[in-house]
Image 1 (cartoon, rainbow, N blue to C red):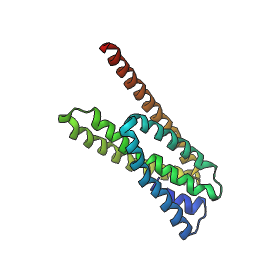
Image 2 (spheres, one colour):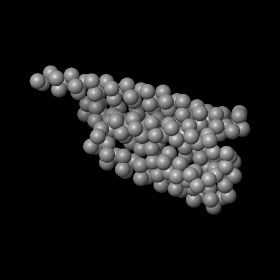
Image 3 (cartoon, one colour):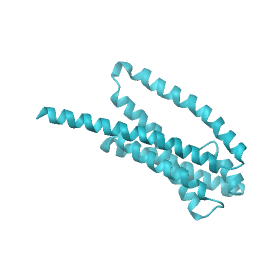
Length: 175
C-alpha cells in the first residue's frame, strides 16, 4: 500500500501533486488511527478475532480499488479505510503471537515474525511492480493482492475456529 499508492494516485488517478499528497496523507492517517483503535478493541475481543475482521475489511477494500477509473469523493475515504484496516494487521498478529508464545520463546518468535514480514514485503514490492509494468494497470495487482488476502483471511478464520473450539473444550472439561 505505501509503496504503490502514490504511483496509483499519480499514474492511474492522474492527481496533481498537491491533491495526491493530501489524499495519500489522509490514507496514512488511517494507518495511524487503525492500529490504535483496533488494538484497544482487540484487548477486549481478542487479537485474532479483530485481525480477522480487519483482514476482511482490508481485502474487500483492496479488491474495490480496481473500480476507480478516475478520482472521486469516495477515493480519499477508501484509502483512509484501507490504511485503517491494513496497517493494524501486523500489530494485531504480533500481539496474538506474543500472547500465545511461551515466555522463553517469545523473542525468537517475534524476531521470526518481523524477519518473515520484511523478507516477503521486499519480494512483494517487486512482484507488484512487475505486475503493474506488465499490464500497464494497477487492477491486476489489486486483484492479486485481494486474492492472496483471501487466502490469508481463510487461514485466520480457521485459526479463530480452532481457538474457539479449544476454548469450548476447556470450558466443557471444567464442568
